[in-house]
Length: 356
Image: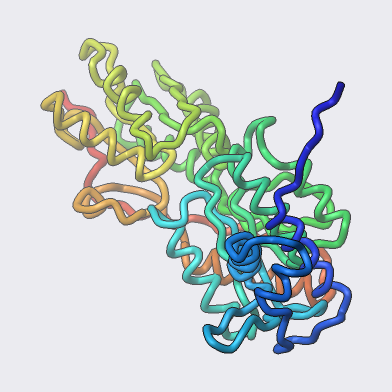
C-alpha cells in the first residue's frame, strides 16, 4: 500500500496565489486578499497564511506593506531574474553578484538571489520554486558540475520549456543554454609552463574533482606537464567544498614527503586552496617560494597571502555583468551563445627557481 503524501496547507495557499498571479487576474500593484480572507477561504491559521505569504514575498512575487496589505509585485510579463550561486557570502561570489545586480538594476529588472551552499538538492529545490513562481530568466553557477549529481537534467528541461538560462563557470553544451566561462585550460597550461621555466621537475596539482572548471584546469596542467617532460607529477583531488579545509590534508601529505621526492612546485585550482597550502607550509616550517613554489587561480580576497601569490585574475564583477547582458539578449530574442574570458596572469613572488 502506497503512503499518502499530504501537501502542507501553506503550500496549497502559495500555489493558489501563484496561479492567480499567472492567470492575469491581478495586475502589478493590485491588492491581494487579506490574511483574514485567506484564513477563512482555506480554513487555515494566521500562522499558516503568513508562512505562505512570506514565501511569496521572498520570491518577490508580492510586496507586504504593514498596515496597508499585500500587493502584487509582478504580473504575467514580469521582469524577474533569478541568480543562484554556490556560496553567497564568501570568496569571489559576492563580487559576481554585485556586478550582476548593478546591471539588472540599470535595466529595470528585479533579482531573486539564491545560495545553493554547494548542495545539489538545495539547488534543485530553489530552481523549481523559482520556475513555479514565474521566473523567466536564470543565471546559475551550478554545483557538482563535473558529476552525475549535478542538476544538468533540470537545466535541460527548463531550457526546453522556454526558460532563458545562462550558466556561469561551467559549460554543459546544452542547446538553448548560454554560458559565461573562463578559459580554464589556458590557466592550467600556463601554470605548467611557468614551473618549467623556473626549472622545476617535480610538480603537483590540487583540485576539486566535482567542479568542472577545477577538472579542466587540472587536466590541462597535467597534460602540459607531460608534454614538457616533468620527472614527477602528483595529481591530487578532493570531492567536498574547499571551504571545509579538505585541501589541507592533501597539502600536508604532499609536503611531508621526503625531500628527494617532494614536489617543489604546486598548482592550486583556486586561491582558497592555495591559502590552505600556505598554512600547512608554515606548520611544516617550509617557506614559499624558497622551499615550494605555488600558483593559484582567481586572485581572490584571501588576506595577506594575496600580496605574494602568483595567480590568474578572475574578472569577478565583469562576469556578473556580462552574464546579465547575455541573459537580457536572450530575453529579447537572441539565441544562446558562449562567452569565454581569458584570465590574466598576475605574477607576484610565490614562484622561484628550484632550491639547490
